[in-house]
Length: 617
Image (cartoon, rainbow, N blue to C red; front, side):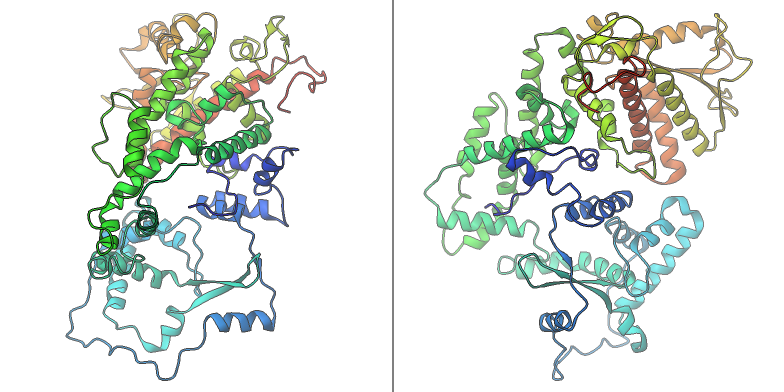
């Protein structure tokens, strides 16, 4: 079942924020309309949503055509028509007695409900937003946060007992209301209740959801029925078309073609069919995570049908006895043909398990059909876990994770192996081909020093966060050739010894490394760490030395990974935020990408007209 409105598939937020130029293709314009300045300060509103971490809200703004309704009598009348006053004869249940057993919850359940609020959720009449409570009760708030959580738990239990004073119920259970004007006419009322009341509702609903499910399914498929909407769709299709049908593959391919053209326009680069295949893979396989509809439709359908099969059977039990969901067998056959010699997943309701073999086959096909050694090295490198950290970062200018349009386009072209510039001569005198790879290893590259300094600063700030003060380029510690390491902790790291680290970023595509990196991902970084450890062998008795080597295409060396894992664990323990280690990895990955972009741009002659050389400016 498809909506008549065209909807753009999910992009990573780095890609959504970087809005590209216009296109003459009408289908692409239809996509770009959602991400350009289409009215007022919509771009600023989207950026604020992203800065708040409200990705869902930002996406809703991108695709919404609703506007604020005018402050008029007609709007008020429309709202009253949708929400009339309660009748005077309304009969409510008797309030609970003092000795009645009521639902009681603990602080763990309340904390879980607090954290389930969407980032950026608005507050009610009292102005208290869910984010306020999140910040005040998170792990880093310490004893004060735990005490506040206990007080909130007691308040929630007090509300569940029905003991709230009637004089404040109008405020506590009231809401702010906002009237939106629908594009097709009419009013869409949005009511935002007080956070404490919503919190109590969340806790209560979670406790009774299972009971509601047993009493209402399959007659009611809303609250308490997981996958209810999907089950209704599958049941309807099975009931109407129990004798088979056809899959409209051409429609899916047409949508994929529109996505392909839209990406090329957004990022101002020519994405070949082979590069589009790579881009449509998940980030963990070296792609951009912008999936082809034709690729995800089969795994999505199979996981959906299996997750709702029992519920569909209940819905159709009186009409069709022991009937499989429509097209399930055909979909299984199609998956077996696409993935020969593969067993069905152990968990049939998990889409990722159906999708994983398909993605792996596509990636291996790209790798095995690589004609050039550089392409193979690139595909191996970008499929490393650390290579995709930057694509998963929340693009926010407030925390320094937003890439400008030119940097983002350059980084995507390097990841996909696209043409970046016209062949020209570098400032060092060497020739630069259309891939722009020379700048990544050029000794006169503009990005080498900034990238190196940024990575070391990220490591130093992470150490300071866990209460381990550190300094960069310490005096008094030198290696055999007189050069100093990049950093030193001023207090012992472990075993009574301070930590000394020295970082480096080697080029995956450099002629000296390309043979090794085309055989094994991360080979250049591993080799660089071995060289560093040999050079600093003299200080290893008094200090714990860690070589931190990364590659331009993203992979990290084994010792860098080990140090990152240890540092991440301490960050999580100190901050109480389970995502703290992920944020560290994203910052390091972004530093690598910014350095790559600066290095590529640094090959240009000083002060020349760049327009005829670069596509991405």
